[in-house]
Image (cartoon, rainbow, N blue to C red; front, side, top):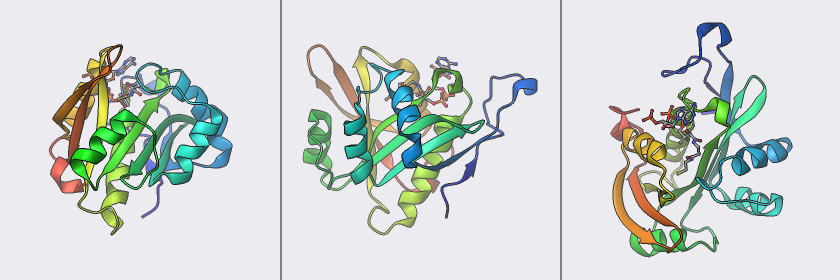
Length: 193
Ligand SMILES: CC(C)(COP(=O)(O)OP(=O)(O)OC[C@H]1O[C@@H](n2cnc3c(N)ncnc32)[C@H](O)[C@@H]1OP(=O)(O)O)[C@@H](O)C(=O)NCCC(=O)NCCS
């Protein structure tokens, strides 16, 4: 398959028809770096802060880095790692200890004006199809975490709708997270996808 997935007819678009946007899901390209970094930084603290160098390091070892392009501009980012990643993150370490072999959505973030259009779901659909096709990742659990302090209830609802279930929690003091997992089998989330 290719990474090109049409997002021009979102299932849950809240924008009026007259302002309907066109877009697609595609693989990250080096020219996306600055825009994607700005999208990430616009979503703190829901996602972790990144520098350009940190983004480069994640992309270099990612299983998949997907960009949601809307009207020709990158408006969303999804980075997926697997258990072989060298990632100095306590959340990643928690998952590695419990799941062993797994895939991991390190972050998903959309530009504020791209939220609520179904683009997050399209990013996940594209990722899951890609993971299922790759013998190295097919059948592995797909995990992520969502902040509970500060709370991110919208993301929690979003992930539950996609079939993710809670597998544990971790309290960092100033921050806390809930870990979520689902199979990377496209059919398993069919009802919610
Ligand atoms: C979470 C996210 C990826 C979901 O993608 P999406 O395409 O917006 O998905 P949905 O349309 O299903 O919306 C999911 C939730 O986002 C919130 N949301 C949707 N549209 C929004 C908007 N225009 N403004 C603010 N929040 C919005 C809502 O809480 C919504 O949940 P609800 O429909 O149950 O109320 C996306 O909203 C996003 O990037 N949010 C900010 C960053 C973030 O929280 N990332 C996840 C970290 S774990």
